[in-house]
Amino acid sequence: MSKLIINIKELIQIRDKELSYISAKEMNKLPSIKNAYLLIDNGLISEFGKMSEISNFKNIEIIDAKNKFVLPCWCDSHTHSVFSGNRSDEYLQRIQGASYQEIANNGGGILKSSRQINSVSEDVLFFESKERIEALIKYGTGSLEIKSGYGLNYEGELKMLRVINRLKESLPIEIKSTFLGAHAIPKNYKKEDYFKVVVNEMLPDFADDQLIDFVDIFCEKNYFDDEDTRILCEKAAELGIPSKIHVNQFNSIGGIKAGVECKALSVDHLEVMNKNDLNLLKQGKTMPVLLPGCSFFLGIDYANAIDLLSNGIPFAIASDFNPGSSPSGNMNFILSLACNKLKLSTEQAINAATLNGAYAMGVSQTTGSITKGKAANIIITSEINSINDLPYFYGDNLIDKVLINGKEFI
Ligand code: NIG
Ligand code: FE
Image 1 (cartoon, rainbow, N blue to C red):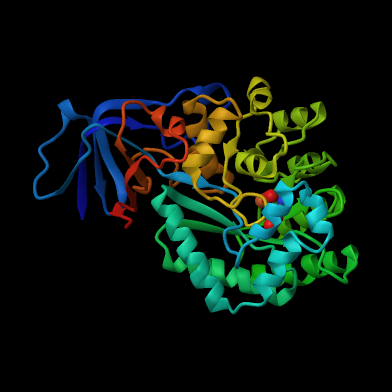
Image 2: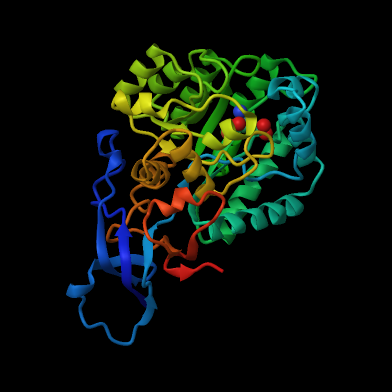
């Protein structure tokens, strides 16, 4: 089944098949064609070019995109979007002055989400999460990474991973599953004892059941340290599973060094960075993932994106959608935050939210850009004047249609 989009005001983010991510130097460029067409065949991008050079296609469904831009869907490479209930009570406590850590120390935070997850059935969790993710697709997300990490025991983590895998089967977007058993230390457990269960029992079993694409760990004071990070990433690597890790959210405690040395696919957060961390990132192929929604919501520092760029380090942006530190998975808003707070140009922010996001979740060969042979996962914007309108009208979703594998997602 073919589909032809005509009269596109500007077709954005056209890239060669070989390019797996966009370097820091290139992030300010967004190759495009004005007044363009795009042909979709069997769910894939098969041809595109200038309207003036269009061939005579017959018997084909046509979408007229007059005054509209077309760009690849967002690739959201860091979310905790499988959860149950929410933590809006903690939100109010924080507004009144309590910190994220204080709330966590009083049994709230991740441990509260863990109690919520462990008190619902797999089916309830699945349907609750599916509805939430369908809303994200309508906001333009075409690839999504989802972490476990609220089970914090064998059964609970398994339940989350099974739900993520059911979501993979029932939704048309590309979903990647990350095992984050080492997200927090469950009540009445010594860290060492719980960590052993994560590494020696959960990880090998869940890998055996083919439930995980990546592993993750919260490398942070009072949670897990750089040595734990190394142990987990190395064990995962032995099983052929790459890692994507939480580092430098509140403190720099060696997580970046461990991540780069273990060849992690991504190191995520980076609100707190030192010179040494920057130097380490310059060397490896590990992609930093910045999460401005978390800084916005918690009122903590934003990652220093400009420092990364001036050191030649590219990065992705992602939503970190979760009930505690970033309760929105709307990537349109993340784009606005990236421009407004990380001081990125629209081009840099779009590169970070598409191809570099795809790289950070291992899908850049099949999505993240307008490239022949890639999935036709595309956003057709509403009628706008400039691509800058997307971040500028923050809180709006200037989207007319989202196509996933060439099909309109309604
Ligand atoms: O990425 N920092 C650790 N994990 C999440 C927050 C999880 C939560 O508070 O529920 C994050 O911010
Ligand atoms: Fe996170």
